[in-house]
Length: 192
Image (cartoon, rainbow, N blue to C red; front, side, top):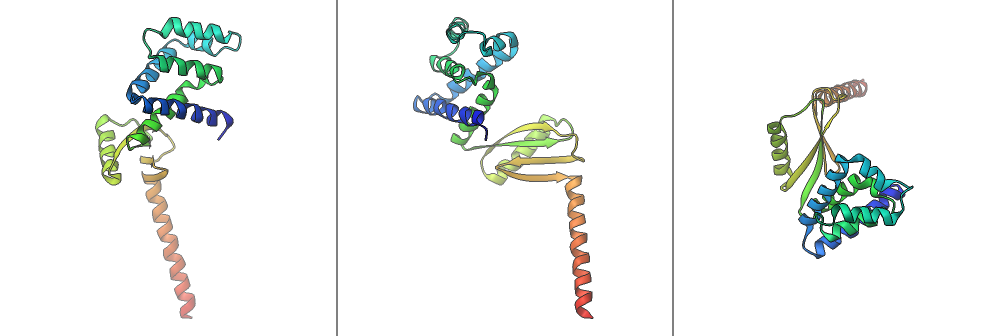
């Protein structure tokens, strides 16, 4: 973990604790999502808030002028803390970290579905349902297109990989054949 990653995690955990203590996790989460959405829709403004050539006090004033009527004060203050710690340009990672903390609190598992092609919402729902039954808890998946997969999918959840692809089936067959031949030759040597 890099120093930046560690700082993002530590800062976001503090923000999450504040949300938890105020019993406003969802409100904090939605405001953070709204802030990121606005900044990604206005990249020049986002660049201005990340610029080393703009004074911190000017960035604070700009945030206040732009967001004081639409963000709760805690999220506005958090944005200023991110600017002060020079990690405001990592707002997407901060939001993703906050979302993971929320999911942990709500006993929701986050995972990834790697697929060589786009999946329909129905397909994603079926995969999600199967894993929710397997883990007996709600699961939240992010879809990642991986053109290197040979048909099928790979699921990463709870630090475990579940492979459902032609490539993994071929690897299983290869492993079984290798074991068969190893056992066959071993038993023939022992018989002599």
